[in-house]
Image (cartoon, rainbow, N blue to C red; front, side, top):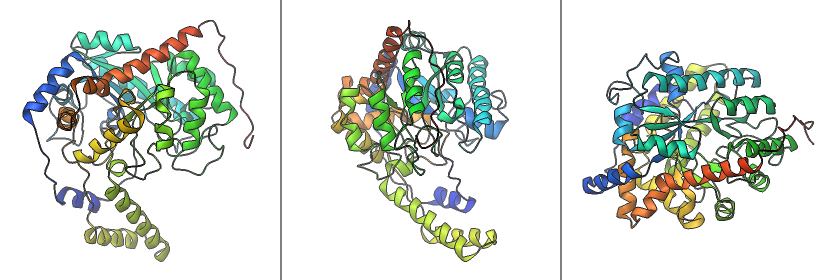
Amino acid sequence: MIRTALLTTVASVLIAGPVLAQTVDPAGEARISQILRRTPLIDGHNDLPWALREKYGNDPYAVDLATDLDATTELHTDIPRLRAGGVGGQFWSVYVPATLTPTEAARETFEQIDTVKRIVAAHPDVFELATTGADVERIHRRGRIASLIGMEGGYSIDDSLGLLREFFDAGARYITLTHSKTTTWADSATDAPKWGGLSPFGEQVVREMNRLGMMVDLSHVSEETMLDAMRVSEAPVIFSHSSARAVTAHPRNVPDSVLRLMPEDGGVVMVTFVPGFVSETVRAWNSARSAEDARLKSLNPGDPAAVTAGLAAWTTAHPIPRATVADVVAHIQHVRDVAGIDHVGLGGDYDGVDALPVGLEGVDTYPRLLAALMANGWTEADIRKLAGENVLRVMRAVEAVAASKRAERPRLDVIAAPGN
C-alpha cells in the first residue's frame, strides 16, 4: 500500500503521458491460462478492502464487483478481471494507516477484516475464506478464489500478544511487521531507525507468530529488521509485495544480501508492480518531485496555493515516466537469479497505488506477465512455482512449525523500554 497522493495535475499528466508499446502474445497467454487452471495463482497483496473503505463507505454492495469495472471505476479489481487473470488465491490486505494511534489501528484493522468477510459473503459462489495451504488448494479445485487475510503494519497489535492471537483467530495469516513508519518494536525501511532492527519485544512477536502459524512479512521493513526477523523466526518468511533493490534502488526493495539468504530461510519474495519500486526512472522522478516540493515549501511558507501551482508547473515540464511489463520481468528474473526459482512469487499491490505499469493495469493481466516470462525461457514448472507453488510451500512450512509448537503455552507480553 502506498499513500503518496499525487496532485490532480500529476494524475492528468500520467494519463496523458506517452504509452510504451507492449508485446502481447495471445498464444502464450492462452497457455498460461491452462496452467493456472491446475495451479492456483496466489497474489500476496491486494488493497481492495481499503479501496472500498475510501471510495464506497466500506460497503462491498456499493459497487458491483460481479461486473467488469475497468471503464467505470478507478478500481483495479473485480470478479471478471480476477477470473480473466487466473487468480486462484488472494491475500486481501487489511491495511490501516501508520498515522493512527495503535488503539485506533487495532479497531480499524478488525473492521477491515470484517470487510474481507463481507466481500466473501456478498459473492459466495466466487470467494471462500482460506486459512491454510490445504484450504487454498481445495477452494481452487472447486473453481472458487481462496480469500486469505494479510495485516499490513505491526502497530495494529497495540504492543499486545493477546491482540496478535485475536487477529490470528479472526483469520489473519500474515503481518507486515511495519508500514511506512518505525514502530515501538521494529524499524521501517522508510523512517528513521530506532532499534537497529527488532526490539526484544519485536523478537517476541516473531516467536509468537511462529507458534500460532502466522507468516512473518518483511515488506516495508529495514534491512536490519529483515535480518533480525530471519534470524529469530523458525519458519520461512515472506515479502508480500517487494521487489529487488539491485534493479531499482528504493529502500522498500529487498537487497541482494537478503536475497542470498532466502534458500537457507526457505521463504519467498513476492515481486510487486508498484512503478516507483520497479522502475529506476520512475523512482528518480519521484525523488526529484519530492525535492521540488520541499524546495517550494521552503520558498513559500504559509502559501500552499503557490506550492501547488509551482509543483504543477514542474510536473508539466517534467512528465512522469511510465513503468512497463519489462520492468517487472527484470525484477522477477533478478530475484530468481540471486535467490533461486523456489523463492519468487507475485504481490501486485493492486488497488493500493495510483498508477501501475503499462500492460499491468488490472488483475486480469497476470497471464500477460507470465507469458512474457515464458517467452524469456521460463518453463511451465518455473511458472507454477512463481504463480503459487512457492507460497503454498511456505504456508505449509509455517503450519508445520506451528504444529510442532502446539504444546507450548501462549507467550506473555514482555515489552522492553525504548532504547533497550
